[in-house]
Length: 184
Image (cartoon, rainbow, N blue to C red; front, top):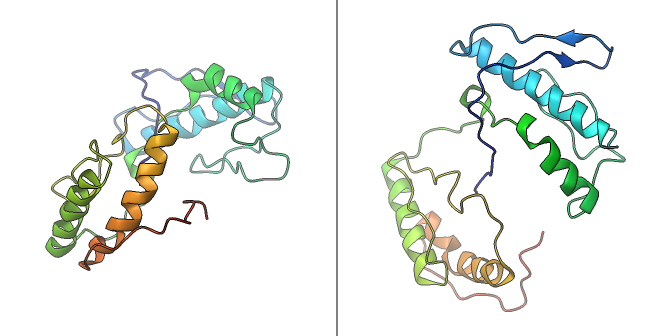
């Protein structure tokens, strides 16, 4: 439900090496939709190039900047080399521009009310920092901030999610399944 992304204030994007060995310069002005997307895609190419220098054979990003990290031979979460490479290359891992974010239909007033009740339920059931949805019904992307949940918070999140999930559909809360792992 929450996406974590790095922020950058950089407006100039240097040339980026492509798979063919030449360099590419972003086109368009930063304020233009095409320019923002082009800068993002070029940044993703630079990110992939940086990770390749760290020993990871990743595919080139597609036209929208998507990099298939599920491809055979891709790095595994928790791999210390991958985590070190991510830190080293973080300046190139730009946030996804709003123009490329997939958005569903706007939430109805009833859905927004359910999401507000869900947030209250989550806070009441072990997640005191759970954020309220915005006026549009969307939860903030940086709801947890730039950190990972502790094991205790993960357990509390699983329990609270089990209890509160029905509230999103306007149903009453339920009781948690003590055997659930939250995986899957």
